Length: 297
Ligand SMILES: O=P(O)(O)O[C@@H]1C[C@H](O)[C@@H](CO)O1
Ligand SMILES: Nc1nc2[nH]cnc2c(=O)[nH]1
Image 1 (cartoon, protein in one colour):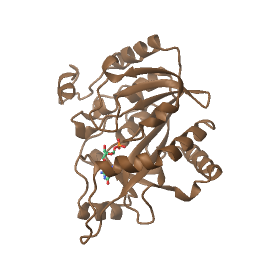
Image 2 (image 1 turned 60 degrees about the vertical axis):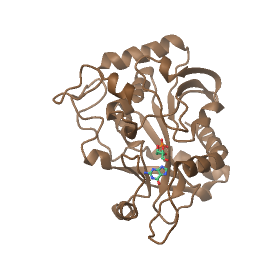
Image 3 (image 1 turned 120 degrees about the vertical axis):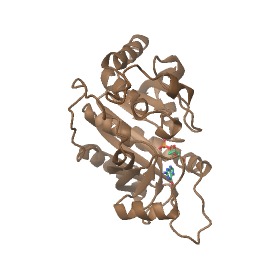
Image 4 (image 1 turned 180 degrees about the horizontal axis):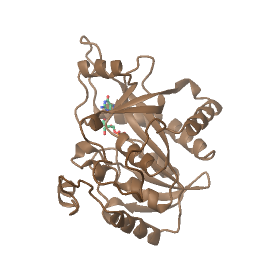
């Protein structure tokens, strides 16, 4: 990717892989603060096909990523590529309509760049959504899974956005992740789903991140299930690591857009069109769910 390759800051080196300085994050945050009067406490990152959440905001100010200093750009269908400030249920929010993925060619610090910008804007809670493949055979396409934990497979292979020199202004060198997904927010989400009458399709489980962009083989799906994963996707975990590092509360939601293939006799094939089609089918329920939930935060 051109931008991924050319926007590399001078701080990148093998001994100091931190890609952006505190000042650089702050410049972007200050630019945004100078261009909007909104001061959101909640940020939402929209997964594949889930960007219409941002359309619910009122009194919107919209910034295409290309206009924001240092912001990367989205390259994946279903990711519009703009930052939307506005009010949802009367609460000021900022919404990423389109996220960045490692498989797009961005390094892991670029993928997570917006999260530290949100922190510097004064955001306290991050709601992160994704489209994911279901591994748990008790799940159904169209279910929403509250993420209670994750498996960071790229992290096992050295791709963790917190690698490199640590800046204590963001957080500690060795952040705890056993409480990554806020228990109170999950309880609120369960309560919201019950009230909305959609408790029947709410699941709670473990999301596993793979680098992508290829979908999993049958053997890989079986392996991930054995490891304890309920869903698999290509995002979210890096953003959560950076958010928790700087003390944001996190709620994670996976929309099960497809059930993964685990049977050698199956003719089913994972594909992005199916992913987007399921998000189109479920978008209204998900929007109502997030919107009702935000009213309680
Ligand atoms: O951004 P998310 O994680 O929702 O997108 C998922 C993972 C890939 O980007 C894509 C595969 O269909 O959907
Ligand atoms: N890795 C992965 N990502 C997805 N995103 C949506 N569905 C899937 C899937 O089956 N696998």
